[in-house]
Image (tube, rainbow, N blue to C red; front, side):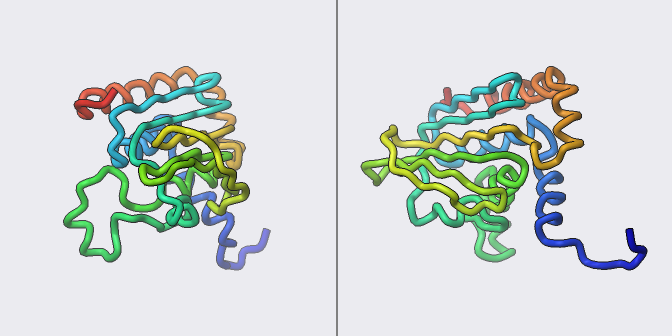
Length: 189
């Protein structure tokens, strides 16, 4: 290792910063639930496999993602809610920074299945760790979106090891966060 100060490569920076946006299972689920609520969902379903270590899946009946937005959906600093800094004064939604889905892509394998309310068909989208679409397939589904995270923190081995060691504690923290949203999101099942 050199003592010379130099820039960190972009891929490493993205992974490090993503680990600061999504700190734990509760943060990951919180971000996905907020996206569902922002999409106007009246029903949000959260599924976990092995306390979230294998799979975290959030399904909603919100408005879905329009096909024009697929490319930017999981890219860093991409959002539909801000155009310039002054827009921050008028934000009335939970998610607005364009960081969550990008960070989740960097930390896990992400698949999004969505159908926009104006579309007759849905799409199954698989993303790489940079937030780019790897696979896009037509599928049948109701209006809404399902985001699936497979093997969360798999790109950060130390964090993943700690996550697996404390699975039940992480799960308990996540359920506390969900209880909070159950209390404030009136009219949502």
